[in-house]
Length: 156
Image (cartoon, rainbow, N blue to C red; front, side, top):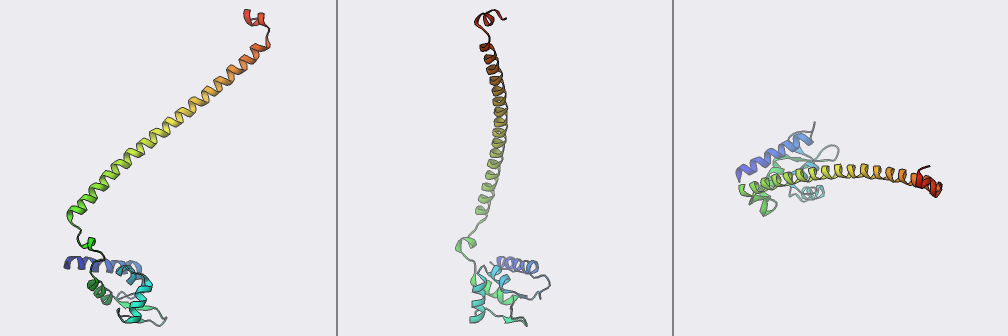
């Protein structure tokens, strides 16, 4: 449990570094605190207004929330749902196996789609050739009907 808290704290620090370019690294904005605590920004503002979460406003009127206050709130709250804390290595292995299975299936489906596309292309080409042949034969028939019976019979 302590290792998990440390991982969450480290994650929160990384999030802060990624989202706070140039802002004091000891504080979070309401948006950053909301992402870390997995709540909405309006909920963070409610907690600040009610005193549930420590914070102060800067000269521009924006909330500045100390990192330690966000982490303390995160530690007090615990995991968001019971499944998150109950995840086991077997669950993770099961998910990894499921991902591998889905990747193999995706590969098969992609190959099948490619083969279908090739077959469709070949069929279209054959259809076009047959249409051309039908047009040639039809024009020959029209030409032959224009000749008389004896000319058709003796080829003259």
